Image 1 (cartoon, helix red, strand yellow):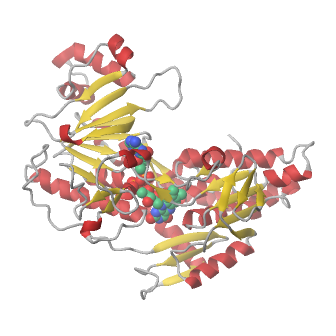
Image 2 (spheres, protein in one colour):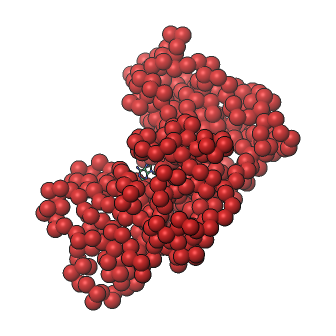
Image 3 (tube, helix red, strand yellow):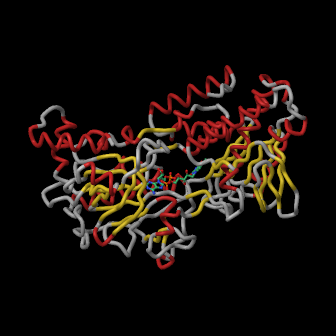
Length: 496
Ligand SMILES: Cc1cc2nc3c(=O)[nH]c(=O)nc-3n(C[C@H](O)[C@H](O)[C@H](O)COP(=O)(O)OP(=O)(O)OC[C@H]3O[C@@H](n4cnc5c(N)ncnc54)[C@H](O)[C@@H]3O)c2cc1C
C-alpha cells in the first residue's frame, strides 16, 4: 500500500515537490496516472486505474511482464533515454537457475543466485517514469494497450491484494513456463518443484529436518529409511544435477556430521525414458556410471500417483520417500493458456521471426513462454536460458532501433524498419553429475561434429563458464567465496 499512499501524498504536493530526484520523478510520473480513486472506494472495489497512456511529448513506456532470463536481459539492453520501463513480476529478483540446485544442499547460499531487478536495470528504481511493481499480470486488453495486474502480498493477511491497470506503448511478455505435472494426482500437493529460490529453501529445510528427526530416539527403522529416502522424478539436466549435488552432500557432509544415519540416506532418480536424453549415448553412459558410483539408484519407471509418503509407479511398485523433488520439464502457465492468440506447437504464445505476437499491435513475447508459429517454418526453440537471454538481447536492440526512428509510441511502429529476424545458434549444453565431474557438449546437435567431453576437465569448464555467466560482479564474488568455503569447511547444514 505504501506505493499507493506515496502517490496520494505526493499528488497533494503537486509540482511543489523538489525534494530529491526520485520525488521529482513522481511528480512528473503523476501525469501518467489516471485519476486515482479515494482509499475508501478503492477498498470497496479493490481496484485502481494505475498508469494511464503516455502523451506524445512523453517518453514511450515499455511494460515488461516477468523478471527472468528473458525479461532481465531485455531490460538491461533497453535504452532508457528512449523509453520508460515498467516491470511487473511476482518476484523482485532474477534467479540464476543453472546454479539453483547447488543452493538446495548448501554448496551455495540462496543470495548468490538471486540478483535484484534494480541492480540489473537501475532505471526502475531511479528514473522518473520507470518502476518495478510486485504484482502478477492477470489480463491483457491488446486493443486498448492495457495490462491488468494484481499485487502480490505473499499470504500476508493484513494486506488485501488490489488490482490496477498499466497502459503500454510496447509490451514484452516474458512470463516463462510452469513445471509440468502431466495431471498426475498428488504431485502439486506432495512434491517440491525446483524453479524458484523459495523451492530451494523448502528442499533444504525438509532435507535437514528429515536428517535431524531420523536421529531422535523413538523413530522406527522403517520410518528412518523413509525419511532419508530422497526421490527425484525426471532425468533431465535439472534432475540429474540435483541428484549429483545430493549425493555429494551425502558422501562428504552427511557421512561426517550425521554419522549415525549415514547408512540410511539414499537417492533414487526415476525417469520414464533415458536420463539426459538431449546428450549423446557416450555422455549419457558416462553420467549413468558416475551417478551409480555416487550411490544414486536409477529407476526406469512412470509415476502413476503421488501420496503423502510414497509414490506409486505404473507397474504397481510403491516407493516410500521423505523428500520428493519433481523435475519433469515445463509447459505453458495458466496465464499463457488463457491468452486468446494463435499458439505455437506446445501451446506457447505464437511469435514471428521478429518475436512479435502477430495478432496484437506492439506486443512481443520472449523466452520459455513463446514459440515460433508453425507458419514461420521454424522449430519451437528449447526452454533454455541461452534462448531466453539471446531473445531478450535481440529484442532490446530491435526496440532501441524503433525508438530512435520515432516509433516508440503505441501504434507508431507499423511502418518501422525491423531489421534482420532473430536467428538462434545453439552454443552447446553442460550438466554436472557430482563428484567433480560434468558433461560438456559444444556441438550444434548430437549428430554434428565438435567438442564433447566428460570428466573433471568438463567440470572445471562447467564451473568456469557459470562463474563468468553469473549476473553481476557481486554475485560472482558470492559464488566464488561460497565454493571456496564449501571446499575448505564443508556445506552449511544449519536449518534456519
Ligand atoms: C533448476 C533449473 C536449472 C536450469 N539450468 C539451465 C541451464 O543450465 N542452462 C540453460 O540454458 N537453461 C537452464 N534452465 C532453464 C532456464 O532457467 C529457463 O529456460 C529460463 O529461465 C527461461 O527464461 P524466461 O525469462 O523465459 O523465464 P523465467 O526465467 O522462468 O522467468 C519468468 C518470469 O515471469 C514471472 N511471472 C510468472 N507469471 C507471471 C505473471 N502472471 N505476471 C508477471 N510475472 C510473472 C516469474 O516470476 C519470472 O520472473 C534451468 C531451469 C531450472 C529451473
